[in-house]
Image 1 (cartoon, rainbow, N blue to C red):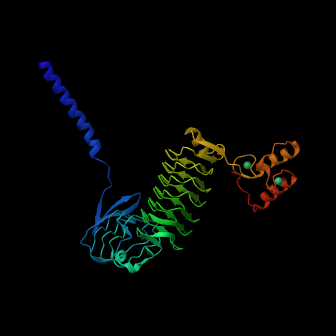
Image 2: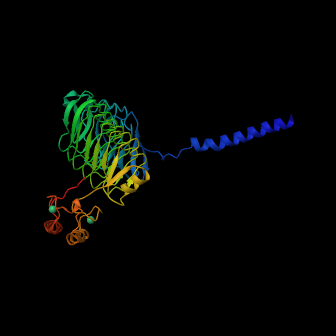
Image 3: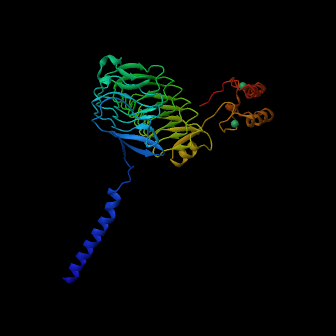
Length: 386
Ligand SMILES: [Ca+2]
Ligand SMILES: [Ca+2]
């Protein structure tokens, strides 16, 4: 009896100790210190201030301060000005680069908005419920802009839409669930395709990405089930997590030569994708980027990151054959010339298509002359074979 009671007590003490040791880990999460100034609450991170909240009693025309506590205000946080319905006008400083999710949602008295040109990121629904947003005369063909930022689209927008030339920023989730949108053209002026921008656009078959776009955001084209082809231009440096996840009709993708990052699950579940060309510049591919892409073959350069990724993840691969690059390193330079000379001397009958710079199906002196001219002038366009 006594022994059992002691055992029970011991068990109880152990459980209490366990609970005590677990609770602090779970409840005391590290959160940034909140500072206050006037109507504003803000946090400071890496020497930059983010406005996280504003007292809803704020009213009239305001100028948001460009510094708080001596730190530049670079971010208007998620829901920071939510339902500040007595605000009539906001003047944002040029220090702001990011406007958060629902940042000015429900500011129902704001009829005019200026977004400074410093802003590169606008969260979803940032200006919904403002008088500007609610005024139908501000909308053009189902789409709403503020300055050169695209901040809203109607769910029933259909057919082809060409984003206005000069547009710099597309807001998060702006065309999300626009399931009648068939074609979108993103001009060169756009810097970033924001996260969720086109997710679940079921009818989207044609996407043209402009040459100024540097990143394709997370979930940007998630579940675009009609999309068959996409060309990622040379300007794009990162394809973020889940960007093309479940685009199950996607068959072939070419990634331009500046890309360095392909995020996790970026192409997960693209079950019909048979080919993706990944340049040497890519040095990071996230977990599961190509999971459930059963028939995929990665076209890559030998000893590139993509090559090793393919090997490690049991994905089929083939080296990119670049005309003029018989050395196979993905670069056409003087190091390739010995291969041309050797082939001329050796008289072998095995034809290496990478040597046929003139494209006549034969290899001879004319190819050596042409590659030398290419190296001297660098103005002859040489193509890829596969
Ligand atoms: Ca080479
Ligand atoms: Ca030839």
